[in-house]
Image (cartoon, rainbow, N blue to C red; front, side):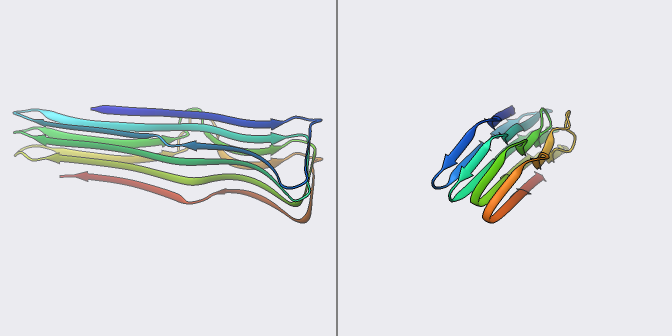
Length: 212
């Protein structure tokens, strides 16, 4: 039994040069992507000299980007943000009975292996003004689970389980990063405070393999 999920998202907000956004209260310019792939494969088999395998793979690629080259003016708080949330699960079970019958289970999750995994705030020109100014490039949460279980009951049978998580370890492109960039000449005016944040929050990676 095999199950595969491919999840790809491109989410882009662009404020072009010459554009002006004003607010008498708060002003929010935010791109938000949430990806939740979940795959499960389960197999069981009995009989003489056989085998059973369960294999799952969840593939996640994304671009979440907020770009501005205009004028953003808030009387209160100004927030320019790109945010991505990832909750990915892969589970594979193989339950085998029978003389010489082997069990094999593989559960794998790949983040950014294809087109990449990017969360980007890009201020290329213009002016940002507010009582408080927040620029955020954030991944929150990053929850990934890969759970593989194999059970072979008969004499002479083999059992193998593999739980695997890969996050931007070997992307085919260089597009794996979390970043906030300001071009030369950009003006930021925070009446009370200005905060520039690029971070990964609430990272929880759990790979479990059990073979009996």
